[in-house]
Length: 382
Image 1 (cartoon, rainbow, N blue to C red):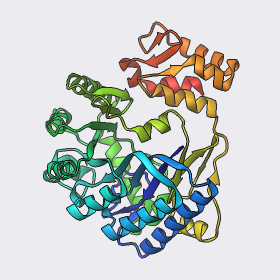
Image 2: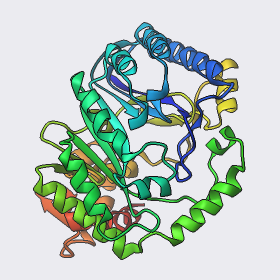
Image 3: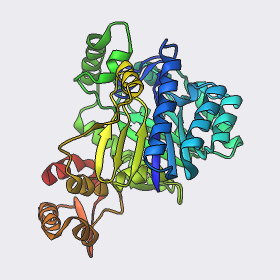
Image 4: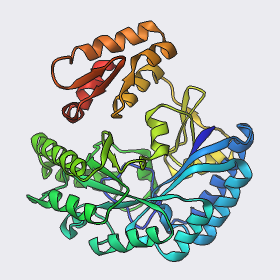
């Protein structure tokens, strides 16, 4: 079995902080992109022997911008290419772009959960982030998804430019009032290097985005302020009964995202679409993030681009430590050899007695405190 990721790049507008491969919803390339996506799906299904899909995730971009007819054609392409009987199907949505017809089309495809890009319940914060929805759009979107039996995740971002005292605490309270099954909370990260997807948008291009990010970074809370917000998130969501099962993710019992667990456990997945990454048979590969490059590659019959230099053993250790279940050293040694196990164990023992890691027999995991400084731990493993 494998998991399937499908990238739908289209957005009503570009959020200036976003590093994903996105493109205007009105792009003249939209029909060609969808045709290329269907062709890639068919080719991959044939090459992989029509594998059973265990989980699926439709990300973006804004998958909820697809028209019901486009969703139906995409569903047909997937069902023709794969044994599509997944245990979980997630699609991402902007709270302002959900309507009954689209929801029913996603449900017909097999959707079991929706991930809403709420980001904040503050009008000021949403404007600062360049979002196109309003706080008033969020609750109706949650209600609409639930009316069709879908589980709901809310994506939230903290550490925003000029974030007011108490604004993040209010966001957490507003989110909990909606009773989501799952919450993802990320610090605002502002990359200052251009990504391939910039080519998909006109206008001022990278210089405009760079100026916005540089100014936004100056207006962000400092490292201590970010750590305070993260600690508050962990405390508030934990008290509300959510399990902090991954560094940036909290879930009610039994509601962890199965698809994302495949990534964090370094399992097998196929990614299709512009900018999509795959991990199959221990090898990583990707598609280009520029829309024209992706379309040309698929139309030319070329496969994914191999990613060289990845260390599967180190990747596996780092990904496992993102989870509250941590790294099973015995299983790790059996998979990668006792030398690899000894190297990882020695690096982690440097944190013994610091309150950053905890050990339970053969299993080592980050503590709540350790999650605040996870990047420092991961650097020691490289």
